[in-house]
Image 1: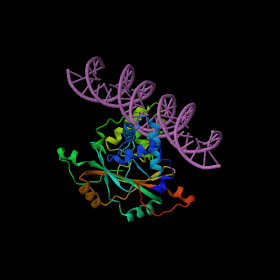
Image 2 (image 1 turned 30 degrees about the vertical axis):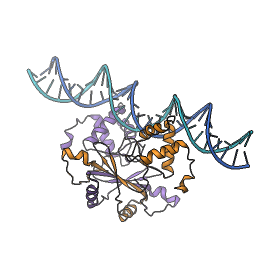
Image 3 (image 1 turned 90 degrees about the vertical axis):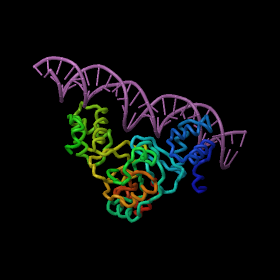
Image 4 (image 1 turned 120 degrees about the vertical axis):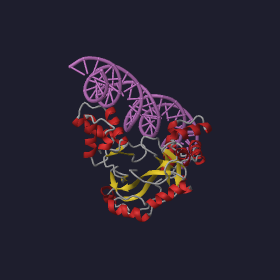
Length: 146
Length: 146
DNA sequence: TCGATACTGAGACTCGTTCTCAGAGATGGC
DNA sequence: GCCATCTCTGAGAACGAGTCTCAGTATCGA
């Protein structure tokens, strides 16, 4: 990522935020990133963490996810194009690597008139751990996700 | 929707909220719904509007959309399964009626182990009005929407 | 070295939303 | 019809997430 790095000065604080993000595989919220960064750099302020996260997202070093209305934004250092499945019960989010067919995107762009530059796709349901005791139905109904 | 209506008492305030939502085709935020409802029922409080919106969503009379992290929740009286395309510039959201193939959902459920009950799909880009002057590229790259 | 610029932490602030509480109105049993 | 109970309401306080402001500090380039 050297071509993108020139856009921001890599201060110790920003490096710490990026390191925390890269070490995390659980899509932490900004508050969680703040907590973890404080363990490494105790003097850091929340504004700095928010600013750094914003910068990392803007420069393509991280992705910002919003998993559900009202929920805090979550961050992901995996910047490759991917989607997420979010557990309705425990809130856990896992990565999904199943891009939707580009032909479908083109069709939607044509029908809506939008110049589509990307999309956010989130599957909702129960993770294997939460589904197991209740014996939830596995059949995908894909109903009413809009 | 009589089968669902029995779950909530249809007070004048709730009826006003539902009427505003049904009359709107622009996916208003809670604050916008509040403003419009006040034009009809001036004495109504914001807590009542938020409560009513929550109830309407819970009973399936409305859908809650979160179009982008940090943005206020938006509401939609069209409860049929559909997705949205959101303009990055003006924030306008339009309905998209292009469900993703159920085979793909089944495949993702199998691969991830999740019991998938639904999904949220949002396309991002520029609406025809915003794209026109700038002459934006129409080719869908579908990059990095996660 | 020095001035300009970028960055920092602290904390006040905004915004969207939820919670609390007392009062009002609806409901149901008698 | 009366009354106890329940549900709903409006007002406003409180909350969490995120942003803004500001003065101090670090870094960069000349």
